[in-house]
Image 1 (cartoon, rainbow, N blue to C red):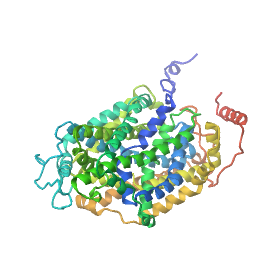
Image 2: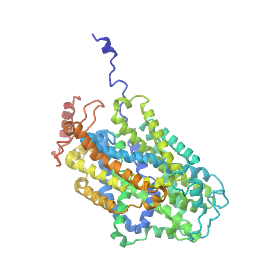
Image 3: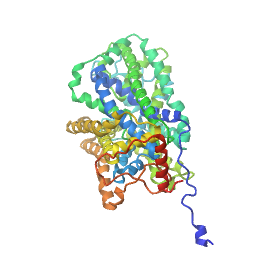
Image 4: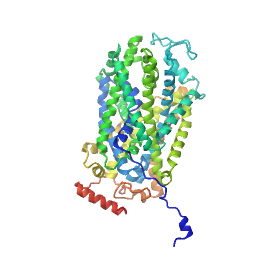
Length: 589
């Protein structure tokens, strides 16, 4: 007969909700597409092509894509699907001492959650002003203008365009003094509104995220296609396209071109951020993630190339109409918030086109933002499943993340916030951090866990073994390219002089902290883990798959011997028999 104490004792499983799954494969595809296809496709890739030799840039881009981007993209997605774990606990299952790899990726995600959404605040501010006629950045008769505007000749350095003054004096309210200055409260309200949208898109988890992406992931394509059709029919569009694609083969000898290609691939494919692992973890076990990953990679790169045609056709028209050189147009935020608005203001019905453009920018950024928040929430939930998989816990967790990131994002909407934004954008999710994480991921999976063993896991899921090229990339090619590129990045002088003007010597300190924090997570966690419990850090197991939140952690780290572990190929009947034996060994019928 149970005692009174025994009756009052609560079962730890009681109230714990099961881990969710995508309702169908399309929700997974659209969520992944929404994450990897973002603002970088529209404002960064086209100008990297122009800056680095036009169409020739596609050569180093494709080298990094096929040797690093696709292999790591597939590795992270397959790992998430097989383990049903987020970006941290999935690496705990590979080997507990390398859980720091997942923590490092979540540091990158935290950076993105804090500063990336500021772009959405800018887009919302512009979108609101796009309903005005005439567009407020198309004239000089405004309170924020300085009297130095000149519309017809932008080649004179003593003049500034009304678009530049709207951007600097109205949107950013830039101050030339050092430091951050006061908060721009109109922009802060836009930032708050962006977080409110993001929160209600993901607060219920993939049940809401999977439905929202049907619109947010497809609408930008419609807008991009409309802008492309309008752009190529304008006078001067052909000149813009020539600048976009004109080949300069001498650029292939420039190491900076290869570095730019690698950085673009890693950032635009969202690798080494834990995001792909988190999204893949909600897949059904037998989903063909190999086919999905190849299709998504093709879609991402094709979108980048297509966006270049839409962007440069409009920019070519602007250069033709104003009689200015296309080379005067800058990349980055200046493209989306200075050059493109200027071009749109020259079109008949300019307000209509401006609304379409900034809606596209908003949805491109929104997809990426709420998937980044989802990645962080998934990682935290999987670390504490017995507490955070209870009714209401998810909503509170996402609310805490949103409020914290909003408060941490307020410095970016101050008078000196654009300088801080550029520092974080350059050195936060930087190429150096992503390259080291990618190198660690491929080495841990291929040499500690075993590339052939991981291929067996994939075969168990999808029914066949992927191309062996991916395996050899994990084992040799990807780590080698990452190390070489990373060493070049470290040897190259950092462009801190521009930021030092705004923040003084603190710019170097901020940049160093942004780079070092994720990099130190890996060795620091190895040291702490081995000191805390060296035996459990190297405990071998038979499988990676999660079967229950409170089952013992299953790991695959056979005394950290750096050699691939091989298992013979099995036919489907043998695979099913072996899987049943493995599950039985863990007490699962």
